Structures are given as C-alpha cells and as structure tokens.
Length: 472
Image 1 (spheres, rainbow, N blue to C red):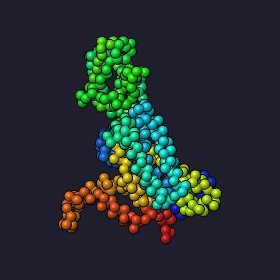
Image 2: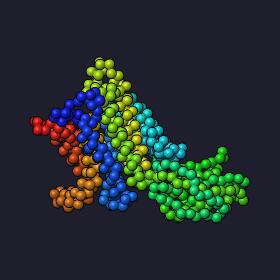
Image 3: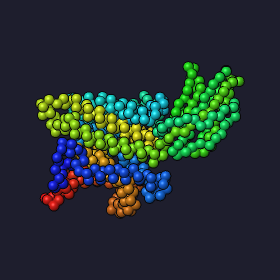
C-alpha cells in the first residue's frame, strides 16, 4: 500500500516503478523532515547559534529514540518479516555495547572502528543463538532466545568481570576524530607538577606523556583533573605504553573537561628520566549535540537499508518463511539459511544500537539490558506495527513519549486520584505502579483496537489521501 500512486499519476519507466519514493512530493517531504531534524540542535539552548528555541531535553530524547529505532528495526527484520520470535534482543545490545567499550578501553580502538567490529561480533553471536531455529519455532524458539537473555548478561557479569567491571558501571570514552598535530611540548621535571589549562566541548585537548632515557627504576606518572582528583590508570582511554616488564613508559588522556590539569612524574629509587608532555587537539563528540549528529544520520541510513533489504530476493524469502515456511521450502527456499540471515541482521542492528547507547551515555551498566528491556522493545514493535518499514519508528516514538512526557504529566493527577479510587491499596504501592499500569494499558488498547499497529493505520491514511476524492 505504501507505494500506491495518487489518482492520475502513472509510472513511465522501470526506474520510477522501482523507486522507494514514487513522487517528487514524497522525496521533498522526506528531505525537508531530515533537514529539520538536523537543524534542531543548532537552534537549541546549548546550540552554537544560541537561539534557545528548542530545549536540550528534546535533543537528548530524539537521540535516544533514534538508538532504539535501530534496535527495534533489527527486531522487525527477525519478528516482523521472518516471523521468528526473540526475547533476547536486549542481550544482543549488551554485546554491542560492552564489545565496543572493551575494544576502545583495552585495545585502543577508535569509535569508528569499534562500531563495525562490535556489530559484526554481535551478528556472529546472533548466528549462534539462531541455530535452534533449525529444529524449533514459535513458543519453543522464544524460549531458546530467552536463554540468550540470561546467558549473555551472566557471561558479561562474571567470567568477563575483569573487562566489563561486572556489576560496577563501566566508563566509555567519547568518540573523537584526531588527535591532530601537537601544539605544545613541555618538559616535566622530577617531582615538580606541570599545570596548564585545557578542555573544550568540541575540540578537546589530548595530553600525552612520553618517558625516555630512563636509568634505574621507572617513575610514576600522576594526572590531576580539574576536580583535584588523581585519574586512575584505567581511565586513560587513549593508550598506555608499557615495556616488556610491564613498566609504564607513556600514556595519553583526553582532557574533555575545562579547567586546570596537573601532571606529576615522581622518581623512584633515584631513577633518572626525561619526561615530555605534548598537547594536541581532537574533534570530540562528547556533548549531546555532537553525538546527535552521529546517531541520527546512522539511524536514518539503517532504516533505509532495512527498507531496501525487504525489496531484495533475501527480503522476499524472509516474508515467505514468515507466511508459510513449508510452502517456502517447497519453492526451493533454504528456510534454515534465511532464518540464520535474519538472526544475523537482527543482531547486527542490535549491536550498532548497543554501541551507540554506550557512547551516548559514556557509561555502561548491565541493568540497562535486562529482560524487561527486551519485552519493552517487543511491545514497541507491536504498537508500531510488525512487518512495516516505519513500525519501529512509530512504536519507539510512542513509547518514549509515553514514558518521558505523558506519564510524568499524568503522574501527579493519578497519584491523587487513584488512592481515592482504591482505598484498600497502599498509596505508596499505587504510585510505584503507575508507570507499568499505563504502559500495559497502552499495549492492551493497541492490541484490541489496532492490532496491526500505528504503521498500518498510517498506510491506510496515506492511501485514502492519495486516492481522494475516491477514497471509498
């Protein structure tokens, strides 16, 4: 229905027939909507233009919506187009998030390389948990994917605790481009701190300390941040250089907070050394506005790719497996192979979303990837419309607006009214239950009144508009 023409408009070439946007007006509206979203941060309170037309809260909300649109779009490929139920999507996001953070912290990967590598790693794990789809389907496959939701967080919490921090939050460096050529070189004397001003929201200072001509014991390097705290070695995100004996011979740190930094190199046991501190600039994406320009274009690109996957031979095979896997097999479709492809693509999308979530928050906790998050994303897909290209966008936007705008507005009124309606229930319990009650109520309403989702109603509306005045 999405590609139906307005009354009186006909295709004259194969290119027009194959185009996603069938009319110039469709292309114009989409381009204008994308341009408007790109301009929003510029006119926000913290934007470079200083106009303050849009609250920074909405910029962050759009970024979070875009991240979960990517994740739910991957779930749509698996559930909506291929008909394979998954209850472990949040666990796949955790692999992408922690995988990218470990690559950056331990191996020195930049965000631009950690993103595709962690996404491919997540895709491979998705293939592993997609293997049961050869023998089981439906409810039994849902139980198999539920196993992933418990196994993956357990592995990240206990066997990999040294890398992930276990139950402790794991800090994640901000994406950046650079560093560029150094602009300052200073010698550091023994036991004499070198103080300097650094920090900028967009062009951050990268501090590098190099030790050379060491005689005797290696010295100890200390970096004091603007808050007056010593920075632990685990927080030196760029790199830590060590010799074969494990002695630190140099390090690099991203000074993203504005203020005075101090670098102190303390000699040990009469050792002699030469220490040089170099400062260079790098383009940082530590702010919400900067991350916005990574997240939003990537979300639009991945939605476009998902839309076009369904128009390919692979996408048509996905839909055949969903509608009737036995008939698809009789037609020569390798059902198991296409199921695995769907699991792989779905996990790749989840890995990208997890990586973006890690870098957007600059901190990771396993509490963000529990079973309730998987169920919430499945609810987003149901409300938005499973099997529709725009289902993920509609579902995530509705749920996020419900959670972050509508529920906070209704909470004070419901907190006063519900205890009077239910006097036999403790008021404290009622207040804590408002969020799940409204969330579950919205899901029930959509299942009863609009079981095919908001995207289906949107397609019906577009068809009626294009066929006016013959919409009946």
